[in-house]
Image (cartoon, rainbow, N blue to C red; front, side, top):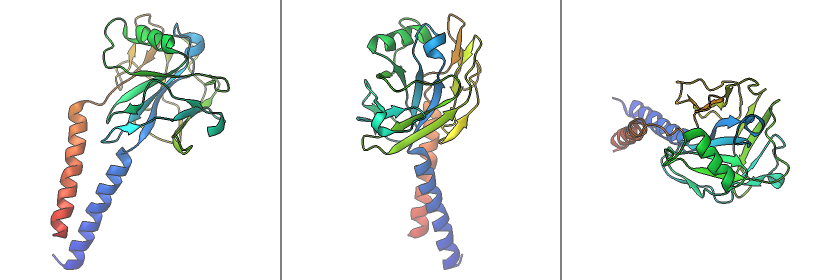
Length: 223
């Protein structure tokens, strides 16, 4: 193999490694339930954040806003200080009691070990059922994730907006369907979603192993 071909191949592998790492080192908004404040016993809207990275992300000081997209009026995320690699966490609009009601509604008792629920509260934010947005800022006010969504489901069983793929800065239109991406129907039969869905450990291990092999290939080519 010529030197030029070797360098080109090494550059390609390096680009793939960097691209894959960058693509997974992100917190994304993976589910939204804007109808929950008016059509659920939880009586509070909620959304889900998922860490697609290979290390925990410190979210101390992070905030959420709706389609006004303004850090100055955003509300603090409370009750969760970090999101582990591959972990999904829920944030509900309300208090610790609201979070407890959420767990009971979606998972019953006591079968929700490992499900993490944080909160946010205050005036100025309301996830509108006619269409709105979720914007997530870090402590420095830098936008980390955003999704827009259209008109919410208006008939029981109410379906959440599903963004299991972790797309960013997109208009959500896919509704959760029982049996797809871990979605299920709550015991009351009134809601469908997949809150706190965590990637299978085997799947995540395969991803990290693949990145490791790509990195090793780059090092061999550069040696």
